[in-house]
Length: 276
Image 1: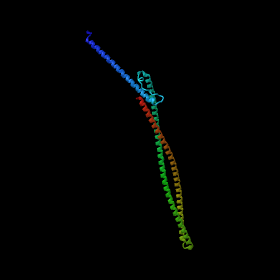
Image 2 (image 1 turned 90 degrees about the vertical axis):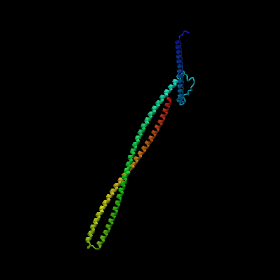
Image 3 (image 1 turned 90 degrees about the horizontal axis):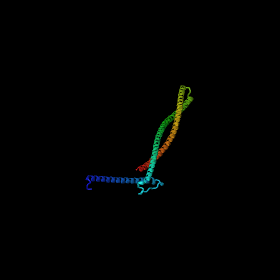
Image 4 (image 1 turned 135 degrees about the vertical axis):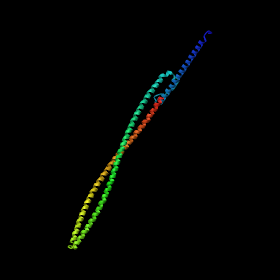
């Protein structure tokens, strides 16, 4: 050994150190891998207990033991992973169903909102028509009252003229009996006056008949307006009833949508928990 070159010894020493380092690194890598696998198995068992054992009475709880952490326990771990995959697929289907239900509820809510606007427009139109009928009826009542007052005034004028004519006839008759001949010319004048009074009475009676005809016409118009008002009130009540039913439908749809939101959020939370 005294004759072995120094360079050869150094080379052997370095090779030995390199091999030792490689062995140490390999051992450390194996230890890290084993530790990682153990942590992964712990996590899988924990997720199983949370998602299966705690939520289903038919799934027993799994205890983490030294045996379960061995790498030889791979079949059971893969079985759990397969269950997780099935559960994840179920959550995905539930999420898609909730999304479809949500879209249906949103479309239904939009449709109900459009129907609500349409009923509101119809209701507003009926109210406007009802106000117009009320206004026309008030104007008709004012006109009828005015005509009635005019007719009463004409009645009073006619009565006054009739009384005056009767008084004049009585006066003329008395005068004729007392003095016939001397006042013949005056009698002719009284007869002419009486004729004029009769013409005036005839004109007043014609006007009276015309006023009665106008009153009857306006009364008929007022009756028609009242019937129209009753009809519009009936239509308004129907529209208000339909609007109330539509409002209840909107409230029901909104409640269903909120319930779907809540169920979807719960499903998403479970899904998010399963992914961790």
